[in-house]
Structures are given as C-alpha cells and as structure tokens.
Length: 404
Image (tube, rainbow, N blue to C red; front, side, top):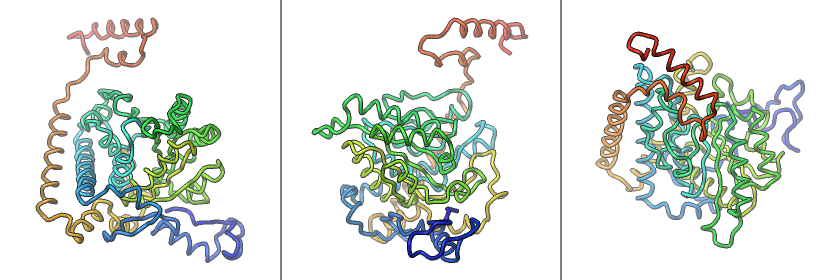
C-alpha cells in the first residue's frame, strides 16, 4: 500500500493538518484512492479493461506502436511471464538455488526495456528478467546466476545491460557514474540525436530507503547526468509496505533533488513505454535526470525464500489481479479486432515451448569445475588469488577422487 498524497502537511486547501502523525479523514480517503488507483497523477494509456485512453502529452511517444507492434509487446510479456513461472517451478524442484519472481511486473519491464536504444545502458537489480529479455539476453543465461554456476554470462557492453546487482540500491550510484561518463564523453545534447545516449537504472520501492540511491540522485542531479531512475514500486519491500518507506508518493521525492518525477501505471505497457521514451529523450538532450515511479504490484513472493501470506492479505492480491498487465493488452486486442483466438493460442504454445527449452537447458547444465570460482573475476588476476587457487585445488586433490 502506498502512502497518502500528503500525511501531516497537506497542500493548501486540502483540509486541516493532521496531528501526532495521524491522518485527517480527507487524507485517509486520498490515501485509499492512491492505493487502488495510483492517485490523480497516474499516467495511464490503457485501462485494466483494455480501453485505450488518449493523452496529448505521451501519445506522440508511441505513435509507431500499431496493432502489430502491440501484438509483439503482448508476446514479449507472455513469454517473459511463462519463463518466470517455469524458473519459479524449477527452484521448487531443487534445480535453482533461488529465484526472484517478476509476476505482475511484466509491463513495467517490457515497456521500459523496449523504449531503450541499442546504444543506451541499463543497470538492473536482481528482478529485471523482462528487461534482460528485451535487451537480447538469452534467458538461459540468467539461470546460471540462480543455479550458482555463473556470475553472468553476457557482455554488458554488447547488450547494453549490466550484470545483476544483489546489494540493494548499489546499482543506482553505479548508473549515475556511468551516465556522468556518457556526458563527459560528449554523448549528450548533440545536434545529431543518433549520437546521444542515456542510462536507465532499475530499483524497487524499498531501495529508496538506501543511501546509495540518494547518492545517485545527488550526483545525477548536480552533473545533469543522462540517467533515468526507474523505480518499480510493487508496494512491498519484502514485508514492509510502501507507506513505511515514505510519507510522500515516491515520484515526488525527485523535487528535493531538482529534477522531474512522474508516476506511471506500471501495469500499462503502453504508458511505461511512452513515459520511458520521454524520460530518455529528456536525458539525451541534456536536461538531466528523471525519476519514474512505475506503480505496479508484486503478485508473487519477494523471492522463493519469502512467504507473502505472513504479511499481506489475499483480498489485496485479488484486487490487483483485476489490473493484470498481460490481460489488459489481450482485452484491448480482442475488443479492437487486433487479434483472433488463433493468435493468442499460438503465443501460448510458443511460450510453452520456450519454457520447455529453459527446463531442458537447466536440467542439463554442467557443474563448473572448482577453479571456476577463481576465474572471470579480475582482468589481471593478483598473485594472492593465484596462491589461494592453488592451495584450494591441492586441498581438493587430497580427497578420494581428487575433486571432492
């Protein structure tokens, strides 16, 4: 649940200020509306019922999204969701050490990921499987991380997608630094827009309580760095609701750092794409950072080690199911005549085949040799690490079989 629009200091004319940190009746009503609808400032282009809403500000940013393109976005989300569900199941079967579900956040990730150019750079946390997919990362590459056989198997420079970051919020300050480098390299504000670049960094609502996030905001702001801070507010920082993280809607925090903040319906793939394209343009043209709060919901556990039934009610989950990001695109395509049942059946079949390929890859993934933990870490391996490797391998050789 998000916090009310204002807690103890409402805007002028919004009613009396609350006392002793208790909300006034007017503030309670505003907070409840914000919980279910995202508030009056929510940018939405596609309703949960699949109705397309006109928006003079953001429609130009998705003018190229015709019926065929929307079908592609639907396919992206279905495949990403199916891969997520299969990976979750494989963890339960002992094939992965842990899994971080993205169920319910497909629109935020696919919409923003498809808004990026190849020359842009994305910094994920550990839940951005959908963004990885849109950047061309083979989903099988992600499984090695969660099976604990690899750190990440892709080239960040080639795909414009940084390795996953486990430390909460750390990627934000890294992204701010990378974006500063883009500016120092003359990749911002050029007359030829093709020469311009931007960075996007993903983090959750809970990460906004971390110091690294605020340091990233400060550095990005003072250097006008071309960085989009993309907060996926899925309402729960593990077991802590958003109302325990902030007294204001998260997008309003941008005011304190001197750059724009905007709240978008994170379950609306069109709105997420349009707003992200706008924000990236702002950055590439030299206008500095933008904070996007994608107002969405985590439909599953925080990770497979978490039990969400211990801290949230089932009726909250059921209410958000009505705002499903995949179903609203399906409803729009169906009601607008953009797709027949054969199309949806075909996408489902493709998703099942995609999941089967992931399962086959995971079950047959070879265990890396023991020395693997020492390689692919440093560009130039220090002598101390060489010594540790030799001592470790010598220790293993002392056992029967020489390997364990």
